[in-house]
Length: 77
Image (cartoon, rainbow, N blue to C red; front, side, top):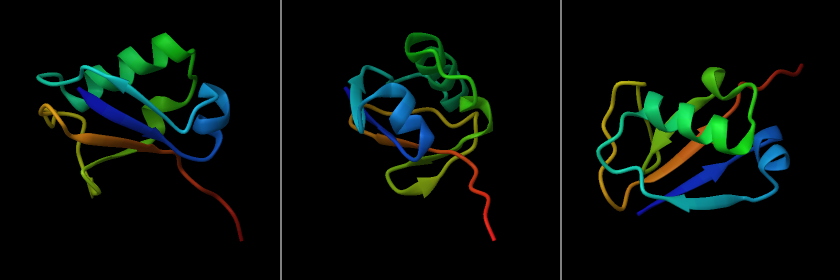
């Protein structure tokens, strides 16, 4: 099983700080699509992804027990 962490507006849209799903063997892109569909998220494709606190590309494969964080782009001044 894998813990998925949501930050900023993603946390608000999901209504949870984190969820647990079985993502092992899937790529980051596959998990983004799955989570976006399940939680009706519009902007997950532009979110950065971290696996175990290290940024990861969309083609990285997730292992059992990995913690995945979705971090949306931030703007400000």
